[in-house]
Image (cartoon, rainbow, N blue to C red; front, side, top):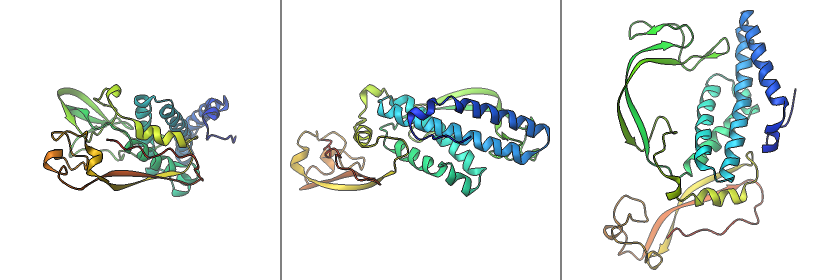
Length: 269
């Protein structure tokens, strides 16, 4: 069954749940018949469909300014993209927009102001293979490879006998969901600026990171002890306060379609 799935209203199509259910049934039948290729194909189709649904919903949550919930969905998309791409052909990933979604998820994540995360430190007693339940040891491993699919099931290593030791504050987390920030204190104006232009999740756009120079007079409200607008990590008074111009990071958005009502650039100081 074919149906369009590019807009938010398309995600409400009742046939989607039916398709996901039928794929699960077919996968179980394939496993029972020892047809691993068919079982793996069912896994790919199901994951690609679920990924598309989550991506569209994440995009529209950003438009509705539900930034934290959208962030969680974007991480789910990122993880699914990695596993689907690892276990699928290039042709499949192109036909299902996997590469497109992976690229746009990365773009959207990069526009978030989140920069502080919590990271739990744990001691793991042992890992267990999610396929055969083999207890994984340095000199005792099963034949299954973590991140690959077998009979329609993704191989993961399940951590057992966990002991929490510490919680660290990091800027580059393994798990992006552990955001420490209070969203009410953050500036999401870059995402707002972008969403004024974009209407649907599958519009083609990109972001180019450049810099722009501005006269020093435009930074008269920046205190000398504040971070320098050039973002090199120094205080303003020790960096650019005595220069004639300040060069600050700048984002240029590139759109495939003609955009006639693009909002004016917002000077952040």
